Length: 263
Image (tube, rainbow, N blue to C red; front, side, top):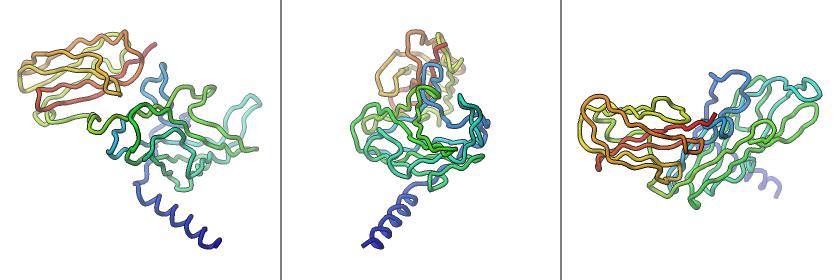
């Protein structure tokens, strides 16, 4: 019976590792960055899970883990042997259908190394905002648990926004195929910004801005001419975070992100 149980665990572990592509850590990050991205907060609006999941559609998001050899504590410099997490159940408050795998597969990140965690799957749950948390164990002189976000070290939230099927926005669509391009100047911004649109076609377009849950912040009809066009946008009353702006001619559209950052 024990052999059958052990074999079942091995088969489950192998199967889990095969159903998703592995992730690649971001090796361009400085050594001082332990986890990336850091949680979303008003002072770090580019942090957190900035990709939206849609019910019934595949989703992937990677988190990089950099493990230093030591860390500073109130009692002095403490050595780190590794940062570990369980291969199951260490990421809490995720919607049904989302799972995770690690690189390395055992989810043990040794000191002086970089690894990553891949959130993946197809959401089969209700739309809304999920306040995700990741549980680690730091192996040092003693083992002690720590969760991210952490109110003392890394405050904020890992919000995973889940929208109804068909409402997820891609970064570009058919208008880009025609040569239309957009950018926000500046981005991030705290007050006023301009959406700069370069287009080889002219006409009337719908311009909309929504939050990550699809709630409309602004909608207007704009007339574009061939060449460079600008749309003034006032974000001074918006909360810090990521917003989606969309340009559409009724048949084709182009969408991208703008980031509101509060000082």
